[in-house]
Length: 433
Image (cartoon, rainbow, N blue to C red; front, side, top):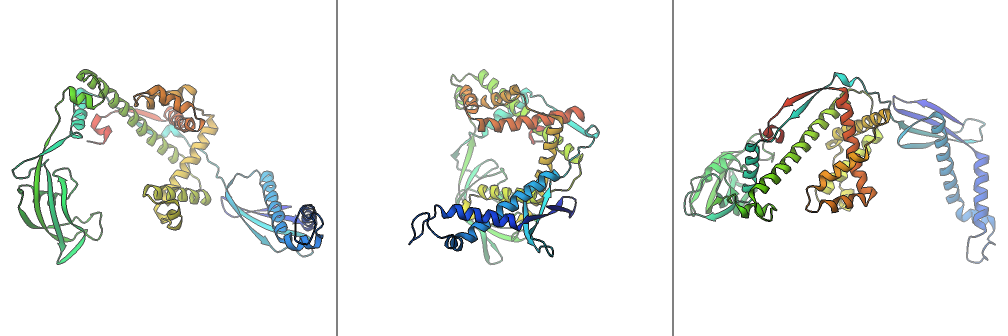
């Protein structure tokens, strides 16, 4: 017998009764079965007295039977009530009613919320309208040149864009501070790797010169112990190297994978890559807006169990990104507060996506999956081998299918929402504006 209590909007409590007679009968049956095969010193196999078997294995058998009975009772109660259980139940024993021959257990658990997606047609989504101009292509080529810059020693004062080799020693008052000292440190002036006041002090120095100066760290400096602090530095400039960008010639084209060094082919290949990236960025932009529209169109409580599981998953991922071993990550749990908001957002979005997919019977088409595989394969020298690699493994292909499913949901949202084409420059889309 089961009785249900509503604790809150998502939490439920079920009281599960297990007849003592049925429980004892099952325990006896298992001990009898065990006695036919158990081996004990001083007894022939199968001849160990039942009383001895019960003394030796009774507790273990009773725990197994009890666990199975409670789980079976819980599963049956959940089936009868048509509950969708989120997470694992918390099961505790309860006092039996007076005169009852039953054992009673209380199962407290959460259920999935009812997710109802509101009117998406009220949402407005800006679709970026971007074209790649020759000027954008030239900027991209310039970036590729800068990535291949070389430096050569010069006998002159350091200037912006030069690479300098310096020794520096910083103090707060008369005390050294962490990270305030280095020897042979290489720095490209103007790249922003160091604070502007620090770089400005280096500009104009010549090799062999030493300079002392004071500066103040910004109030929002990432190292809190230095934020807003006044610091004195002594810098020695060891050497200056000026940059040299490679010429746009056949050798440069070959360095980008154009075997015959043809500059026309190089530009065509770069344009294809840039346009592929533009397409990807537009898709990402639309996806972010579509998911935001979906989340804003619903309101429901989140199961704590799902949020806690997502926090654990995010903690594990963060530990992995920090280079921690699984053993160290298990003993050094990162603060849950760091991940709670993100976990809530991910759980909410996951529940909404599942509802949209189910309610609208959304499925990615095979040709949609293949298009994504082909698009990714184009970035490799042997695209046909990449395609074969994906289709050789259902697990690998399922990752692409998941992306295709999300794209299908985005398309569904775009069909419902008010979509406005918004002219956007290449730099704006790329985040360079």
